[in-house]
Length: 294
Image 1 (cartoon, rainbow, N blue to C red):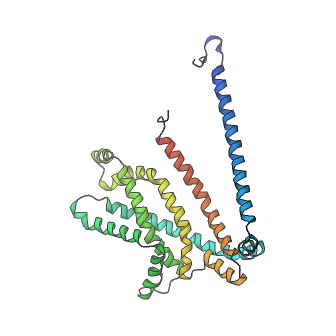
Image 2: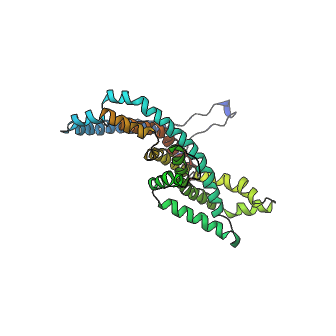
Image 3: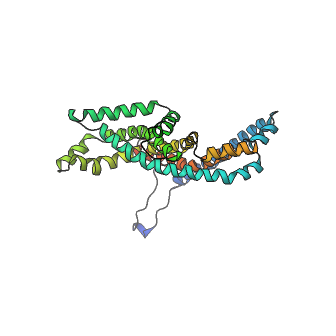
């Protein structure tokens, strides 16, 4: 049975009204939605109650609560940890800009064609292999303590060297994401652009890169979320960021609550980007799969 649709301006000028079958379908969907929401809420509450019962009912909960979840210590340490978090945010912004520029250069070098560019391609490939293989904390030590020992530069703050280490490491990862996006653009796009008289640089800037960035935006945002966490590792160089401030406050109060405070602040910092990444990924997947679901 099909729905009855009256065309506007038809007999009597009657407005469109859904048929009885369509109304029944809509009612069924609403009931199913309410049922799903109710079941989800109940299952979440039951799971939360079971976890709380298991945690609070454990023999050592009182000691753990006093050591890790002391409200007085949390409030007392919050200003110092927030001050350190501001340094993390500054390093994150600077590193993000540096990673975006350097990674794009690396990806462009790896996509160059022709034997004359082989040394550049090999150099870029070797760089990405090297820094994707070395743990970030080792890069921080090598950059933060090795480069200053060469006396090429004046005395620089630890946050500066931490930013350099983040750029070196994450550029290797992000460049591969850029390269995957560039290679995902169909070759016909390049050929069409070149047939219109565009140079290689103009083709990359106006045709290839805009399409490539749209394809890899969710992956780039995931790398950004990962860097939001790893920016806390600059504390190993002595920078008084949120993690180092929490360590200082932990030694002062002889309590681990400041670490919990720092962890929650990092979660709050990353949460908007995580939700935005999930939303964008779902939107991209829905656009690519439109018409494919039966």
